[in-house]
Length: 73
Image 1 (tube, rainbow, N blue to C red):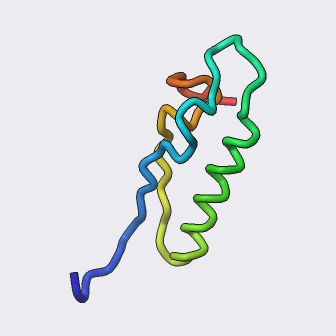
Image 2: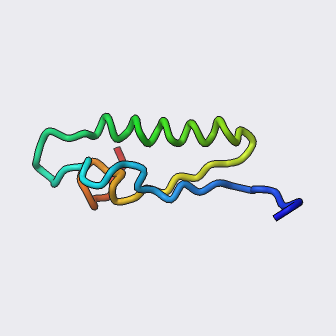
């Protein structure tokens, strides 16, 4: 790969541990902690590669309710 440049970095999701999210309607949730994990990991990668776009793909372990897409809110 000598001479090639990195054009983007893809974080493939599932940055949070399996089971951190809860089933819908069950509380408490670790949602605030999960958001911090995602933010901190993403910022570490951005800081390490400041001139390269970082794209984050949401995994099923990265949402408040396991296997449910986040709302538009």
